[in-house]
Image (cartoon, rainbow, N blue to C red; front, side):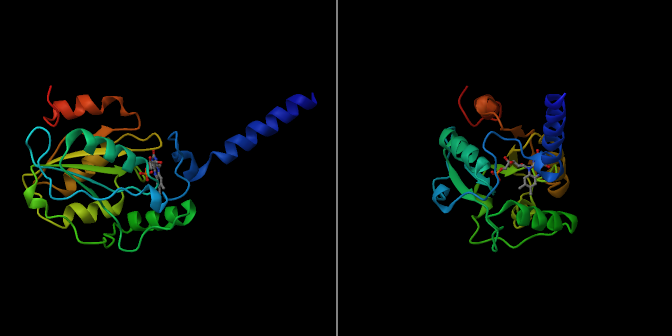
Length: 207
Ligand SMILES: Cc1cc2nc3c(=O)[nH]c(=O)nc-3n(C[C@H](O)[C@H](O)[C@H](O)COP(=O)(O)O)c2cc1C
């Protein structure tokens, strides 16, 4: 009887522990703090032509490092340029204050200032745009980035990592934000197995 009571208490504790925004975090590598400076990847600019001859930019925002890992992997495959989107005032290292700030920015539909300089986006044929899903869509600094320059006619390929949410709502949101651009079907890259096919489908890897 005691054992059953203990099991019930443990189950309740587990459920409570998983409630709230924490329940949104589900990747193998849990992003409980921002990635350390040592995880940073240098921007690669000025080599725009990718392996299939198109001028390619992989631009990404990442707080915990998951999306950075995927962006780097994609860039290794496609070639071209690589750029990390950073806020002028970075998010805190700790999870809870980041959630508070991110939530406020989302509710206010804010466009947080970015750290510059930004690459000149005119020169690219294709922009692969990576981000973590925050409250089902792209974080607000990504919106600042795509609105900073005229992307009419550009091909945008969104990719994301998440704790389980799909990428579709963010793709819809990007299409509304960028009515003149061709925002293609996105790739949720929590598992990396589909990356090559997605790149081939979009002419960024030879078939
Ligand atoms: C502020 C915040 C909001 C989040 N919102 C969601 C969400 O709505 N859905 C989801 O599946 N994951 C959500 N997550 C989890 C992240 O999308 C996931 O851990 C992602 O891989 C983090 O990428 P990063 O390490 O590049 O920052 C959220 C994480 C944070 C910090």
